[in-house]
Image (cartoon, rainbow, N blue to C red; front, side, top):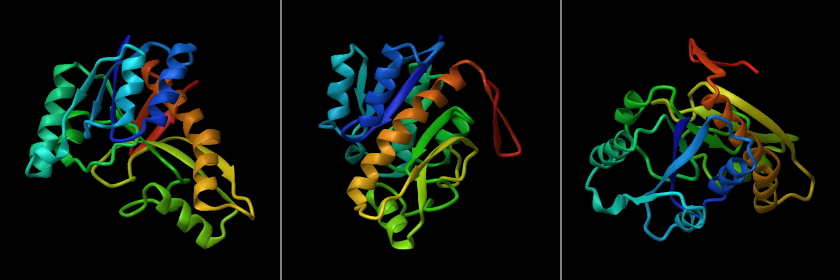
Length: 208
């Protein structure tokens, strides 16, 4: 059974999707053993407590540098023996030290079909605003391993979502979460816990 640590900063809707998947048996051979938040008032902490999942608060504002904060988070993850680290709305930048400590053991969910609409500055509603500006007909979500390159790690799963004529950034964000993010994130986590992902040459190969 692999230990899953989830990093959060806000409401925790992706965390809730993981908790629901765990409770319904979708996630196999893994268990969420800790939720770590960069903010003390993140509602994600409440979601964890309601499901008897241990939590830790490592406030970003208490650290002077990215390096110091990265070390604190990395040390905590090593201490709790995390096998997999999931970024679930974790809005804090960490440096390469954590990537080196957990190579191909950290996952992120991004609200577009990478390599479109990704990289520096593409987060949250900004992604969906740019999708609508470009007039693309399909968007979606991507689960990828975290590397030193922003949104550049091996792609594990992707799911497409239709863009509708009357979409706003808010309606599109909601549909991408419901139809893609909350579906493929638990799937990717389970695949990892079942040892069904292999990385070669910066590509992730999934074996079902």
